[in-house]
Image 1: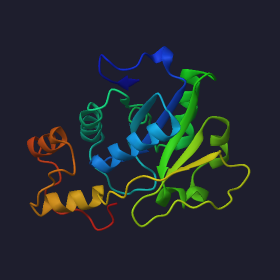
Image 2: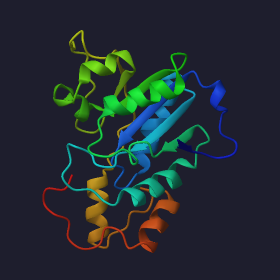
Image 3: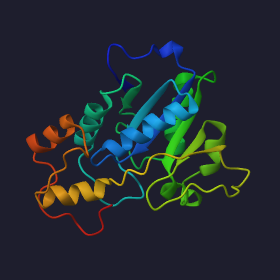
Length: 214
C-alpha cells in the first residue's frame, strides 16, 4: 500500500498515523512543511501522502501517475513520510470517508488515524460526502494556510473530532506553480530538486491551462 525507504519506521511500531490527501499537482515545499509541522505537533509516527485519482471537487487535474511519482520523490526526503496509491487504484470518484475506512480496516483499531486538511478545505466540510461517517474512523487536523485562519468555532456533534494546528505561512500554491511553468518562470526553492527535474524531463505543465482548473 505504501512507498517508503528502507529505513522507514517499522509498520508494527505505528500507533498514530497522519494522512495528507490532495491533488499534489504538483507537490511543493508548502505541503512538506505542513506535514512536518503536523507530525511534530501531534506526535505522529508517520505521515502518508495520498494523491487523489479523480478528486470530485475538481474538474481538471494532471495525470495521476505523474502526480504519484512527484509525490514519492518529494516524500523521500523524510523517513517519516510515505506515499500511498490507494486512491489511485479505486474506480470512480474518491471520497475521504472511503479512504479512511479502508485504512482503518488495514491497520485495525490499535492505530489512531488523523486526516490533515487546510482551513480552506475545512470551510467546505458540510459539502463532503458522508462527513458523519468519518467520526467512527478518524480525527481531522485543520491547518492554517495563507488567507485562511484556523478558527475555533463549534462544529456539529456528528462530525469527527477536530484538531487545529498553526503552521508557518508559506505562500506557495500548485496553481501558481503551474502558471509559472507555463510562462517559463523558475520554480527553484518551491519544489524539491527531484520534482523540478521530473517536471522538466517529462514536459509537464506546458501549454495553456483551462480557466476552470484548480
